[in-house]
Image (cartoon, rainbow, N blue to C red; front, side, top):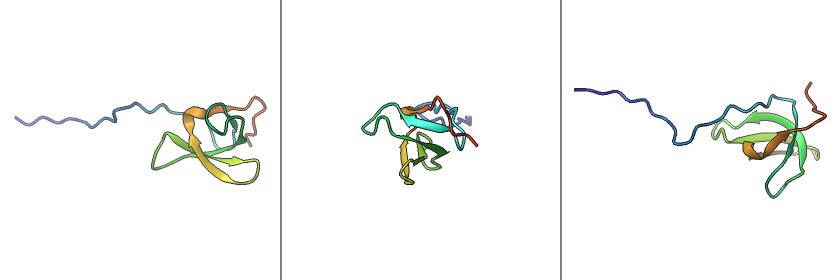
Length: 75
């Protein structure tokens, strides 16, 4: 008898509430307090996101460390 199983990742991945252009800041981690603009979720690891920091550098940070900025930068 053949049985078909769907593969599931061991950890559920929450869909973030961030959109391109949202103002964000790092609420946790070694760069706590860093302010930037949300760009995208990483294609190769959906637990990480790219943000454009105020010094014009794009860096990746864990999504779980990000929070929406109160002011927001969304275009």
